[in-house]
Image 1 (cartoon, rainbow, N blue to C red):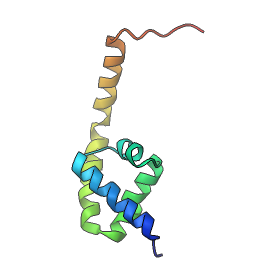
Image 2 (cartoon, helix red, strand yellow):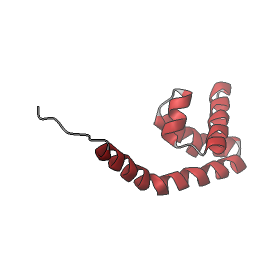
Image 3 (cartoon, rainbow, N blue to C red):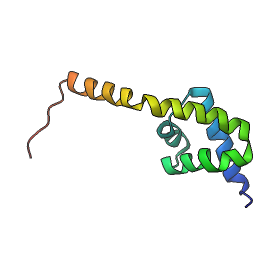
Length: 90
């Protein structure tokens, strides 16, 4: 299957962004105005066919982000409640 040029370019641009900024899938999706699913498909399925070495580097970063996500979630919850967040009754 041959990828359309714009899809191939997008995959390479997203990969470069993730490498440069050590970005998460969510951050990359926001910057490139695409869904998280699109970023994941580009990085997991399309990039290895376009540039296997680049795909390997990106996978390392995404795996590291995945391993650390519980820490980011815990910090977000901590900050949320530290700032005085109160759930209102409806």
